[in-house]
Every structure is written in structure tokens, then in C-alpha cells.
Length: 222
Ligand SMILES: Cc1cc2nc3c(=O)[nH]c(=O)nc-3n(C[C@H](O)[C@H](O)[C@H](O)COP(=O)(O)O)c2cc1C
Image: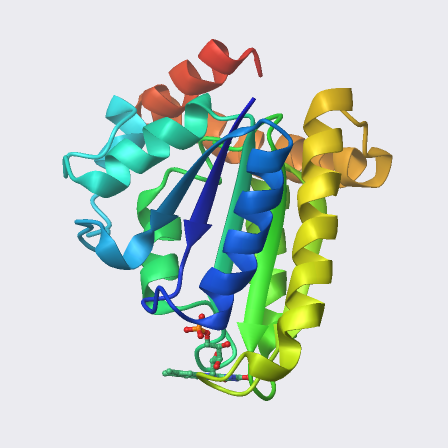
């Protein structure tokens, strides 16, 4: 069982990282093969909106973001964490969302996921919603969502909560993957989004989206 834990905070000592490390440790204790990725440390360019990936199946920018997307495609579980920046995900998380081939390509098809959003005031629910929608639209199965409210750069008062929520999320992810849990409401929502939104949109685009269709075929989606 392979799980990728992705920290979307540029700060590797912040409360987002702390929460993700609790999840990482719990998963390792379960015997899971875990890789922890700091988005702040990778070499990642912005998406330039050329859309060539829809035709070729890969981004023409051959950097760490492209490699990470390929790793996600091979993993069983994904943990995505982000701090709240202006009631949204961080800039580096948004860059990775744009570069990672998530939604149209259905990168998270059949993968179990946990989302983590932290914030100190208002807007962390918006951040969590962005991550949860990303999972749902990309074909993932959301095992748990973790919301942490803590003062900036001071997680001392929330350690107990971070430990409890992180461990619970790791357990849900581990058992979700192990039992291949069926999540009926998520599956129904995804069926509607994929078939009436994404699939019909891609079919109308014809050859321009041939790289996407090849990816779907390789995943057994169509
Ligand atoms: C540029 C910037 C914008 C922020 N905007 C918000 C915000 O809109 N709402 C909020 O609750 N916290 C906001 N914060 C606080 C962080 O989201 C919060 O402290 C978070 O837990 C930091 O995570 P980290 O310690 O993992 O980096 C902001 C922080 C920064 C640096």
C-alpha cells in the first residue's frame, strides 16, 4: 500500500506540516509505504495554459510537478494539505492543482484521499472545500477531511486536536484503502459530474483531447 502525503504550505514546520506528519507516522505504524512531499521544496513552474497536455497526455514542462503527478497515478492513497491564504489554498498548492493533471484526466480515479486545511481566522472551510471538490471531481474517494484552526506560527495550544484528528484520518484512509470502501453518495455525485460534465465536454473536443481519452482508457474508465 503506497500513500503520498503532500504539504501545500511553504513552511515545513507549520501546523499543516505537523498535522500531515501525524498522519504520516500513523500510516507508517500501520506498515504503509509513505512518501512525504514538500511542495515548497520542489522545482515547479506555473501552468502556462497551452493545453498541450490534453493532446499529448503530458505537460511539456518536464519538472518535479510532472514527476509528482506520475507518482500520484501509481499510489493507492493521497493526503493533500494546505494552509488558508486569503480564504483559498496556498499559491503553491494552486500551482500544483493546475499542473497536476487532476480533473479532466481523472488522476485520482479509485484513489482514497484525505484533505487537510489549516487557518487562523476565517476561510479555512473554503480551503477545505477547494481540496474536497478537487478530490471529488478528479474521481477520488474522500476518506476524511481535517480542519485545524490555530494561531499563526503557534500550534502549541492545538497539539492534542492535531494528534486526534490526524490519527483518525490516517485510520480512515488505511481502512478505506484496505477494504476498498464503497462511498455511495460520492460515487453518485462523481457519476453525474463525470458523465454529464467532463465526458461530454471532452468528446466534443475530439482529437485535441486525445491524450485525455488515452489516459481514461489506460485506467479502464472508458
Ligand atoms: C499570506 C497569508 C494569508 C493568510 N490568509 C488567511 C485567511 O484568509 N484565513 C485564515 O484563517 N488564515 C489565514 N492565514 C493564516 C494561515 O492560513 C494559518 O496560520 C495556517 O495555519 C498556516 O499554516 P502553516 O503553519 O502550515 O504554514 C494566512 C497566512 C498567510 C501567510
